[in-house]
Image 1 (cartoon, rainbow over the protein chains, first blue to last red):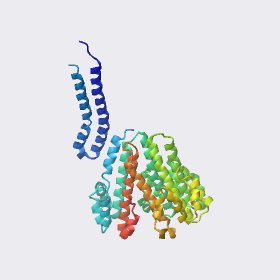
Image 2: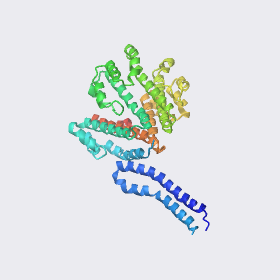
Image 3: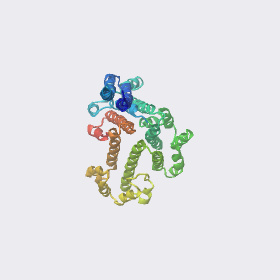
Image 4: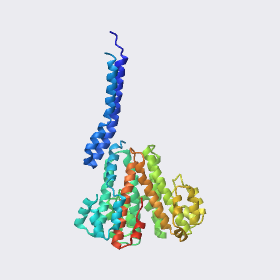
Length: 73
Length: 350
């Protein structure tokens, strides 16, 4: 069986870049969230939600990567 | 510098600043005791309670708001300790050092009591309460300058250099101008050597301050009919908007109306809205008030600037200073039994 390496590499890029984007976004939101919680501890719950929002990027990347990988099956 | 953490904290601190409706409530209070009771319900509660142990009446308010202001400014400096922004923000805080030194020198010249002088100080800069207490205890202007020089305080230099002229003329303007020039030249040299966006934001603010000071000088010079060549030495250099040539052309107008007409095409056209009766009697304080309000508004509007820059700390420092000044004004007006209209006129409106 001949494996087209472009498919797993494409899936890796889709997942990896999504994860990178999430990381960058969460680093900024996390820092700002920590600052806000330091001054207003009551905003803790809201901050958890805000920090989690960029997770959608990596989930989307994961879905796209999975769809690409299905092509291998 | 990473501003996400610092600016989020500062924005949270901003949310504790008093809004306009609360200030209105303060204004509507019938006396000082009810104002104190109202202040105890705000973010000033902790400092009010602490100050209440040793002081009462207006002194209690003065001490509490002063401590709160210092605590806020020190907190911001701690957030950015060791970062490039610390140097830039210290420039802004030095503004209050200059203001405090001027107040002490003026107080010493008119031989006001140390407690009277101290009441007018805002220890938000490098000179803390202990240093200012020591300065107000000095017997005269020379002793104040000598003490600053002994401490190696940078702003002692322009005072020492110009003291001879002051002792001959007894004109406080000589020392005040020397201080201002030194401060702005020093501030501009720091921001000009820095290529960052933060430095650019600060530079814009400093230039606005220089312009405001220079326009005030032009108006005073015209009112006092001072010779143009003599007035020239009181201009602070460094502005790109109003350079010396433009300021001299403003002075050529010869009258307040003429200056206002020339300012119509500039960001200072709001001065034309000052009531004509003030223009007629050349009441410069009305223009100074408008210019101060413009400066404060411009500084506080930095909250709308880049959220990940020095704009937010700058805006907070000015907003806090404005709030403290307004509470002080309300408290003093209540203590002196002044009318509501006079009180409102004395407030910084934002």
